[in-house]
Each structure stands twice: as structure tokens, then as C-alpha cells.
Image (cartoon, rainbow, N blue to C red; front, top):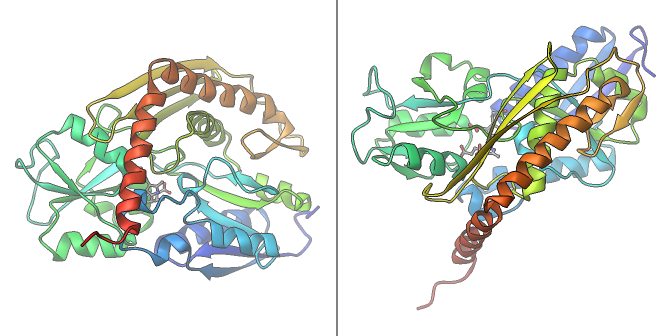
Amino acid sequence: MASSNAQVSLIAGSRDSKLAMIQTECVIAALKEKWTNLKCEIVTMRTFGDKILDKALPKIGEKSLFTKDLEIALADGRVNFLVHSLKDLPTTLPDGMAIGTICKRDDPRDAVLFHPKYHDITLAKLPPGSVVGTSSLRRIAQLRRKYPHLSFENVRGNLNTRLKKLEDDNKYDALILAAAGVRRMNWDDKIGQILEREDCLYAVGQGALAVELKTEDIDHFSLYASIMDIDTLLCCVAERAFLRQLEGGCSTPVGVWCDYNSESSRLKLDGAVLSLDGSTCIKETITKDLHPVGQPSNEFTVTDSQVVVDNAFSEAVRDAEELGRLLADTLKERGANDVLRVVRGDIAVAQNDLRMPKAK
Ligand code: DPM
């Protein structure tokens, strides 16, 4: 294993967007702080999801849209690890891949950016019929329910493109974006409103960065583990277990809100499944006292949720995964499956509309 004075050279794979690069550099900086002799270069790639920016995310219907090309490079050994927004990482990874670390979560909430013509405004105060840009079914369903006076339009493209569309075109009155991404771009001053728990539950994994690696790369586990944030890990594995048990992908209207209290080891998870129009919302909160987290042992396990964790945390992780699955089962008992079945049907119809030539 790499000790802190041995030279280690690694290649990180990243999408080539500005945000992805900032995120990759952020993880590398955290690693270098712990491992002063680490050398790291970045190889960038355009992924399938980056190449088809004109289509709405849900209509593309590919689960690993932003990760597949990168994972091929990882499998080939062209790169040693990938940095992802955890929320873009499917809840099941390809065989032989695992999450090597999850860094301390930035603000997981959603943020609203308003058109520059507005001052001192909130979603509630926007005039009826105002257009809100997002292609997230989760945001649309929850916000439709809460703010029926607003209308929603797709917006795609990287964050720079979206901001330009908001500020230069007069099409959108507001955009919804993850606060974490906006802040990483250094656009804090553009945030007009932060959406709270009662407005909009966030996406599974939102705001957290993760490293994906090959499970055979066991020599480097402790390197990545050095930047693992345990509180974030426990929340995120619970959220991901919830989503996987629901069999919801990253483009279904599923939201979560998670708190972990490290003093009491208590984990609290809210989860909701919505219909596309927001008319149905099945929501529950559950709480569980997790097995306490011990001192790191530098011995590692790959958990059910395909995360490499120190054995000292593996029982807490198992408890967190169980909590996530339990929440999903509770929602299923209340009809979440039926809601998701209809959602998937509607998404499939939308995909077909895109692929089938129009009848003359
Ligand atoms: C996923 C969604 C979106 C991204 C769906 C959702 C938003 C799509 C849109 C799964 N991935 O959130 O319900 O707004 O049209 C994405 C962003 C980040 C990671 C940008 C964003 C940055 C924040 C983070 C796109 N993936 O959500 O504004 O690291 O969590």
C-alpha cells in the first residue's frame, strides 16, 4: 500500500464540463492534502449524456448516461479512478467497479436562480404562468404540487449554457439547480432562493462527490479512504439503498432528505415518490439508531451498495442500507410501485415519440 512518503502517480478520469473539472480538481486537492507525494493528472472525456444536449434527460432513458464512457476507460486501465457527482452514479455499478470514497457533502438542497429582471422574489411570488427551467422530473413534480401557478420547461446543457439561457433569452423566469453545483461554479451571488424540506426534497446523493474505482485496485483503498466523510457516507448509502429498492433511476420523481447525528448515531431519512404532475405524493420519514462507528482499521469491505468502507464502519453502513430499504418497502406498501409504473410508462411513451418517425 501507498504510504504517505512513497510516490504515487494516478490518472483521474472526468467529464470535460467546467463543473466536472472543478469537482475532479477538488477531490484531487483533498487527496493531495493527505498524500503529499501524490501525483495526479486528469484525462477528460465527453460522455454520451454530454453529446445529446438537445434532448430532455428522461426522454433519453439511459441510466448511466454520464458515466458509461468513463467506466470503459476505467475498465481498460486508461484511468485509475473517476470523479462523479454521486447523484449521477447509477445505484448499481458495473461488475468489478465500486465507490472508493464519498467526500464531505456540500449543500444538498436545490437553489432557484431568477431572471435578472426580478429582485427580492421567491417562487411563491412569481406571477402566474411564469416559466421555470429544469429537466428534473423530481423538481417538476414537487414544485408543481407546491406552486401550481408556475409552468415548467425543459432546459438542458451544461451550467454555463443554462445560465446564459436564463440571463440572455427571455424564455425562463427562473432556473432550478443544485446549490452545490452553483456554488462550485462560484455563482453564490446568483442564488435567489434555497428550497427547504417542505418545498422540494433533493435527489439521492445530491451535493456529494464520489470516486469510482476498480475493486481489484485494493492497493489504493486506504488512499481514497483518507478523504471519506463518514456522515456523508451513511446518509448516501441509505439514500442509494432506498432508490435501488424502489427500482427508481436517476430520472424518476423520487426525492429524499437525510440527517445523521453522529453523537447519537441516529439516521433520519425522508423519502417521497411522486406522479409526474405532482398530484400524487407518497412520502414517509423513518429513523434508526445505527451501529456506532469505530476507529478506522485500514481493512476494507465492499458493501452491498458497492462502496469500499473501512471495516470499522461496515456495520453502520449495513444499518443505513437497511434503513433505506425499509423506507422503500414502506412506500411500496403505500402504492409507490403503481406510481412508478405509470411514470415509467409515460417516460417510455416520450422516448418512443422521439425515436419513431412521425406518421404523415
Ligand atoms: C440528475 C438530475 C440532474 C442532474 C435529476 C435531479 C438535474 C437535471 C436538470 C440525476 N443529475 O436532480 O432530479 O436540472 O435538468 C447534475 C447536477 C449536479 C450533478 C446539476 C444540477 C451538480 C450537483 C451535485 C445533473 N448532476 O442538479 O443542478 O453534485 O449534486
